[in-house]
Image (tube, rainbow, N blue to C red):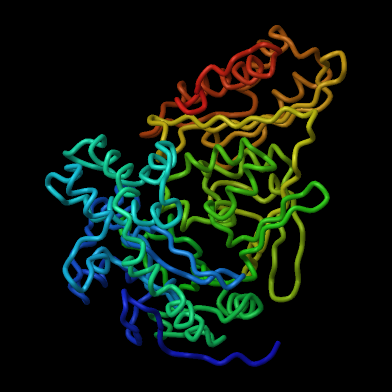
Length: 494
């Protein structure tokens, strides 16, 4: 590998200003820096865990193709170390030099979308991001864009009216991000100098690798470093648990981890691909996965969180591992220049432990596309439908013979054990049997052999056990000719 230039400063753009930071700690959040160091108080702190959206800002970045995209993110769990080469936009940037409000702000005022005002900047920034991508959105698109924003007093109807009205205000010729897009693209391109960023020492070190090979080299030297992609989980380690994450290696900007491709019935997803980046491809080829993604966090979380991070984190309630296991997905793991392939179901060993050697990282995941004859479904059980942590999640993939005999069945759950796991005893009870209610009811009795769930704040063990059994029954009902889905969203029902 060619020698890498090392730079000891972060460089990014804040609104219209070039920023250079040399004194940055790994655990310094964008929210704290904006409020405490820059006195930009429009960005609020509400939950400090990426749930309420009061801290929403836009972050512009260049895609591997060279396009400039802006996405709403949670500043409360976004670290400064992840912003090298980016454009950070706060609510203060929307108001023009003449003091006039932006069309998004005007609509919020005219439709009475603000009462106490605490959450308003976050709503404005989320609607701004939506407006730039979809100037005249549908109600469903509006609601999806606002999943990650909570209002404490106004109620959502005035805000929805404002979202619908933005288009009528026009104003694209005065929008700062649209007017300056070409110039901003050039400025960001100039910031990408191909250098590795290293700031701090052994007690508090921040590293932004220059490229994928450099990342592999860094991790070989520092195998215990905290690897941070989207920080949707690691951010809470800092804001809620006050954990020391040094040395921290930030990889969100590595283009080599951003690839997603479909070849020979396989969807190959780089470990750095975010949920938002993956949803179009997955919705087209594996629709159930696309629907699941819209229930993972809010839009801000989906713009930051990565599928590779969700897997590498090893959480027993991670949403993507169970369906990927049911589909027979595999991982590419890399250490230095050496790669190996492992089945995803074998990657999870026990709670908090994965089949990953020191200095090894998840580089990509390969997901087989179900055949047209196969039946595949994912069911996520939560206390509320949107933006909630999973109590249990079941994924089912079924192949039937012409006489409706089960020839292949893979069932995987999250939230039922210390790791995402297959239901081998249940699968055995179904395999080779006729796909009918009697078979399913007998198989439901075998769940206790596969899982001994725990009770926690999300659900009791008894509830999880009952829900898991009933999800199999639901899958049977929905895959039986003439059956109707037993629970859908209002948009799916329409």
